[in-house]
Image (cartoon, rainbow, N blue to C red; front, top):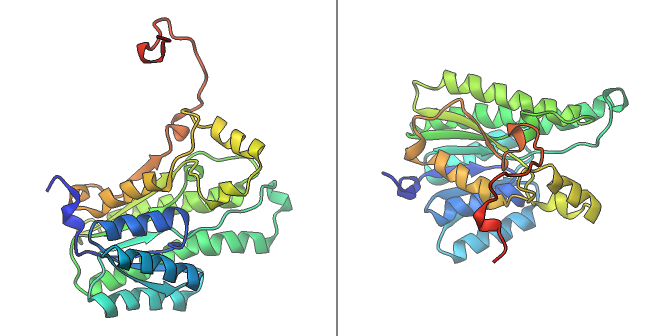
Length: 271
């Protein structure tokens, strides 16, 4: 099939689904006929999103989950299996940022907080998600880990976040090999500067700086990541595994420097 109809009827778990990228992915999946188990810590927000999906004719439930708590993650995957009888897609999206400091100023508690969510949480989502896929004999399965452009290109004073996101990339590539012969693809998406709630709290100056480092000088939208997640969940992506896929307008491609075109872009000439 050369469209997204292949995802219809698939069951997906999406963590961190109460805002931003996770919410966009959950809604994108539901809009394309997938049955979605939204996971997050905010029960009221989760219920609101589920109700909105149901009103549009989609199928979804919410399962309150802290991805850093093993029993919560096990219960999440079991809920998907008990409710829908299978599990085809797991999107490990839940994450936490960190303050910006040099390494010697971070505490051990800072380290544990970031790694418990950004790395351990992804590991447990993969571990118990894959086990549920196997136990329910689900087919055409996909694990999609949401890492970050920071996992590919590091940033000064952001060691804890960068290291955790880079660890997710290694975990993804190894797991892709582990399950290559078992009908489970494993891939990572690395978002760039995406306009989510985090950026809404920044000052105008901070927002301007965030955009300035992007080659096309613009924020991405959560939907930009959701489109890639939809593709990776579809049968069109069955030959893709262990891949690290940036969705970042070229941010991780290298350092951008303005230059003067000898032949100006005719689309940008004044009439």
